[in-house]
Image (cartoon, rainbow, N blue to C red; front, side, top):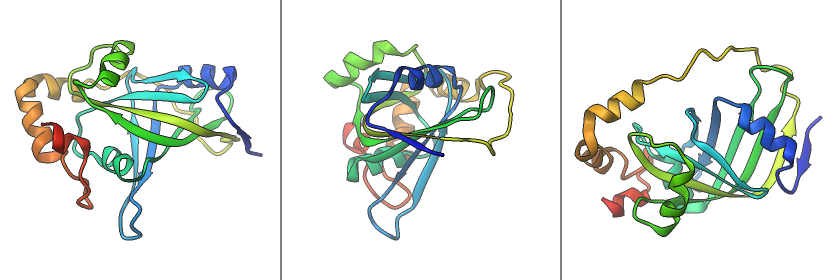
Length: 184
């Protein structure tokens, strides 16, 4: 049932543009390390080319994706249809982190709407695109974006966010460093 592609096709791009949520999966190399799956929302995902994508990553309670990508680069992004025809689309690739102040950040951040708490951009060079049926994924209706994270970031302010990232986002739950630990 699944199909594999060497790059994103126009129909994949159209599918991605309609989705309101995506999931990011990464893992440490160590067998004792944790596998992380993280849901993402907002207007934070961009297809840069048929083999490159990026998403604006907002300050959160952890920073596993960044630590894993820094350690080994492996990353999978998954979209699934909750409305319309069933479909699951996975993007397998090698990730990198673009931090504020870097030239890559400066070239990519204008592609996204301004969002309080933006901490990094995860860029993925996609080497495999896979679609599968999604027949068991339930129908869910989109009611709207939650504003909780944006209100929290606004309340913290820039100095509060820097301090939060310094204390909460510098290492993964397995103790792996993140690029943020060297930035702030």
